[in-house]
Length: 119
Image 1 (tube, rainbow, N blue to C red):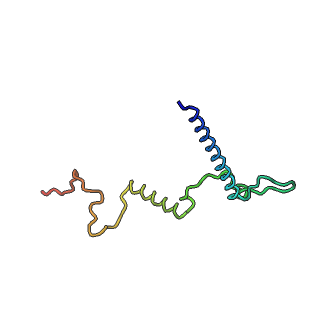
Image 2 (image 1 turned 60 degrees about the horizontal axis):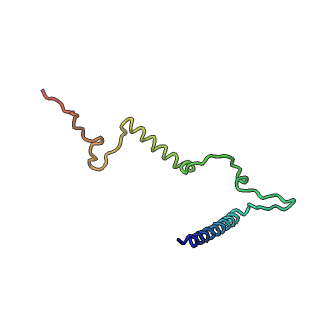
Image 3 (image 1 turned 45 degrees about the vertical axis):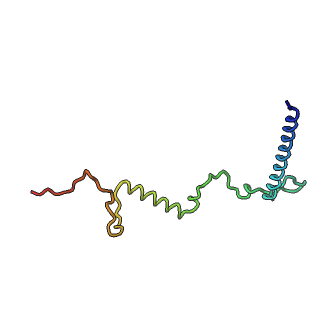
């Protein structure tokens, strides 16, 4: 049918896409250079290169920490909550009444009889 027209169209689209990608890569490189001014690609003879963030902080291979561990107060609060939940599953904890009547704490058991036999 009209194969040559389609081939030209696809070649044109491919070329436009390639130019767009090149432009985007150049913008990313310039943005990276603006964000990190201490990175310098060329160094004159006799000059020393500037240090980067990793060298400046000298942290080595430290593991990533959770946000909770960066705040000791929150860490201990969560640790306490976890411990109380663990204890509540083992033995009943004393708690004050809620309102006038808070209901049965463990629910009403239909197969349990706590009555006293007369006679």
